[in-house]
Length: 342
Image (tube, rainbow, N blue to C red; front, side):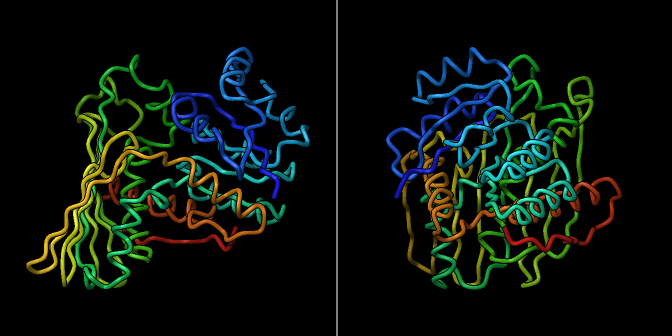
């Protein structure tokens, strides 16, 4: 089965440190082209990572018949236009999270890809990461019992603009603050582990340094209420050191994972089931390669990955409800209006 030819659009830190290296030696996918506003940068990185073509125009890239799929690694404010262009060109789309800056934009992407009969996948790498999969398997096996409470947190310090990505505090490009960039991991993990979508949410947000966080929140804490009765409580901010955790409480046991979300660190899982204690350490692995492989297999007729385009839309609908709850001080229902399956 021939490898799927990929282009990568957007060559920032994430692409350079994680996405491009993931293609090395992969059988299911081949890095064909790089696209950046900086053509010399695209050429230079292409030489390093074995991409034969470099472009400063997405349209020119999409004219290349060797490009079958595009991995979009640009700021979320650009995703709607880029996903639409790729889909209309008949290419498949693997898009970094968050899928969009609003739920309606995400719904439009899902609908466009469905009309064009191309696959759309949201890049939720944690669906393939061993420690998270192990935690989910514990839940599915029944060892944890019925889930009752989930705690999650993910924070990273952005104290000086010069040390952060230039778009991270720009609402137009980022769509919001830490909830969009980091809290989305908490949202997705909670509903992926629970296997259901929250019916309502409540939230509180804050900003202490208004000179830095002029357009986006500095931090936000939120709760999600699930139909089964599980309550998820989560928090995220841009003023604390890099840290993350997941903690589950069920009727038969509890499981913790820390750090839960960054891809650079060893993860430690501890669980208790009555008098039985479980301790496991998970080494650092390439978390980007498995999602590219799964997407490539789907393109060749395999199973649709767990993080499809609609998955990204659902999280955006939840995030919009969280922001609304924080702004109004009133719990909000989660409303879904997207029917696409791709």
